Image: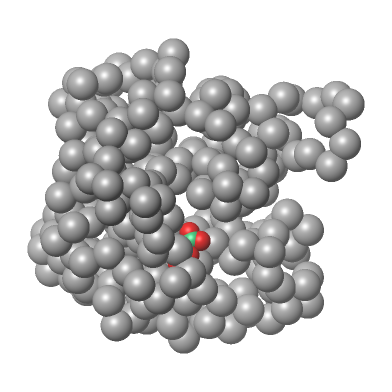
Length: 268
Ligand code: PEP
């Protein structure tokens, strides 16, 4: 059984004091919810302040990006070992990084390798643009992203470096985020999301086999709110959500986490 996961991507929002207030507003409630892994991804400059507040609780931290090199002359960049002291997760390959910062599958692949080698769990984002969706190319795009982003990564790499089956696939989270649904208020339907996530899991199974793939958590992302989260997580195929806009409102994010605990908990 995969543990459901809800991650909040705060993107380039909140100053350090705003981030501190936001986490203080949700921390107690989040910590009280069991059966769901809760991950906050504030901007780099707020990681330390947020970490000091969530330390010792069940709330985990993720970064929104990372460089693939460990150190050196890469002005402005942040390495896996810098993050490892504070974060358990790192979002990689977000469509905004691919779109605005020129991240290719080759770059994302280097980052995924570096995160896994550095003890961070990647939340790898994949998703098709509107024109690909409308032209019926969704599966083609996702297959290309999955095979490119995981090039040279084998099943042991996503399973705590071991082949033990209770660990299989656990180090990896994938977020299926159709680009046309991100920040637009126009989410995919639950049915569409489930079918696409099933396709992604089948592609993973071709790479690593069914057992490993069974442990990989696949989230949906794109305009998730308290009003539509149930549609996605009611199906066992979808293991949670990557939430942007709604993660900036404490009540909304807590509501999404609570609904996930209720729905997934009652399915056990
Ligand atoms: C995201 O940033 O990954 C995201 C899904 O954003 P939103 O929930 O605002 O669509």
